[in-house]
Amino acid sequence: MSKTRRNHAPQFKAKVALEALAGEKTIHEIAAKHQVHPNQVTQWRRQLIDQAASIFGKPTGTTPTSDREALLAKIGELTVQNDFFARGARQMTTAERLQRVERENPVVPIARQCAWLGVPRSSVYYQGKPAVSEEDLSLMKRLDALHLQHPFLGSRRLRDRLERDGVFVNRKRIQRLMQVMGIKTLYPRRKTSAPGPGHRIYPYLLRGMTITRPNQVWCADVTYIPMARGFCYLVAIMDWATRAVLSWRLATTLEADSCVEALEEALELYGAPQIFNTDQGAQFTSEAFTDVLKAHTIDISMDGKGCWRDNVFVERLWRSVKYEEVYLKAYASIPEARASLAKYFHFYNHERPHQALDRRTPWEAYTTASWDLAA
Image (cartoon, rainbow, N blue to C red):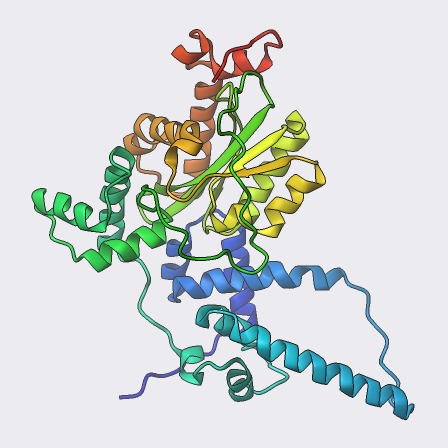
């Protein structure tokens, strides 16, 4: 029996995309509310962001066609562009090529776009089942807690650990959920893959370095935050020496925009550090993120793959946030999570002393000019 293809009106897509952009609900909640796939919600949100700038663009004049030489030059230019487009498409993944297909009021028929991009037309119209079920959400909370306690456990050992607790799960399912959550087993790996186009990997600059003052080194990371229904992601910008959280954002996707917003806020409020250290996540290797650092002449440092010690203080921050805040509560909505985390970070910065900081709070250490302690 053939499946009826659903055609969504542009007004409907705009409504869903705006709701996702507002960040008041998780992608899972929005998808369930409007009965669409979570991947569609993410895609429409990205399309809205990418095309928003065109609203303010100036209209361009038409190219005259009466001049034969100008017309031939234009044809030659388009031929080169099409050849470049075809070569570029072959270097993309199937998912990236599918995202390039123009589905709404296409100038070029979808069948021809699929032929150019080398993807089956059925993949464009396919609508799968919801990406994350309620059962998966419950399992993801268990996996998050286990990963926080034992980040070296891979999918096989996580499966074995869950079986000891009476939870029988296929290993491939664990791998899939870990990918959705954005977590990876931490262990030394071989360099088996090169960074994607435009995603340069920078060297680790902190090895053997003594970090003794505020704004000498900042670091950042993203972690998974479980909720009563669905999940979201938390990004934090931290001062390495004082452990002070300078800015943070909650996001419904793992895209770079929330990381860029948090970075820009920290730079505006506290100036620029000498070095900025992150892992090799796509959010931090993206040009959108690294261009901000370069514009402020900040040296970029990146951890080695699987080397949790290279960014150890952020990992300790996540442990504190989750055991002292997240796991004690079941956030019902994004606004509730945002308000509760704001209170916790105020407590963390201003009221929670650290033994490594001579029993001072991170904010006392960050704002005391005479503070000096090797990290």
